[in-house]
Image (cartoon, rainbow, N blue to C red; front, top):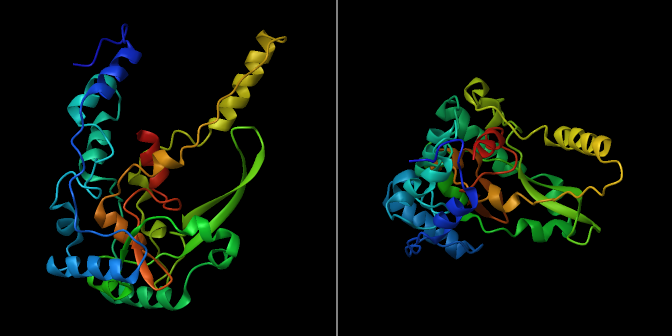
Length: 281
């Protein structure tokens, strides 16, 4: 049972959770190298499962592709998160990955959109030599010809967003982030984001954090005018990539680069459902 609200020893609870052993990752036949050979191997495995990607990727439990493999089991997390108002949603994400509330399109529209995206390619930012390192992330490769055979699969163009950040020394550095342009439509007029039923999404709770920080700084300075104010900056990229998307959501935003198609099985930067569900966790 989660502890009573008036007494909650968070450090001890977290320590107990961390001490719980976790089963080692099971070996998997899937390959993750960015090569045609790896893509061909994965496409052949999908073919053996009649391109039913959910069945193909989840038939081996506790593998890198298994939902929740980055998390402790729900019963272990319960003492810490059991009183969370969205605890059931968190458990659903762990067990099934993030599902997108998406409306359908016709098969004719889907195939036409796939052909258009394959011919068009990615955004110009992916061709900038300085952005090449950001693009070499380990996604799940398949052959582009397999996309049309996967139920509901669509193609999304890639881009690279450049923005200023700071390092651990407080120095200004350029940060490059790979993005899925899930709003860019094909000939059908639809895209992953444009098909999302936004009224079914959770509220996004962290979008106005900067305003809260500014108000907090103002309040601290008002009450303690002579004291130094320290702030901590935490990079959430890695945490974002620990949350699985459900495979039926992942196939809505397949990308193609250098003749290889990639499925991102974690939350992508660029899909509108990702921030609300990440804010829940």
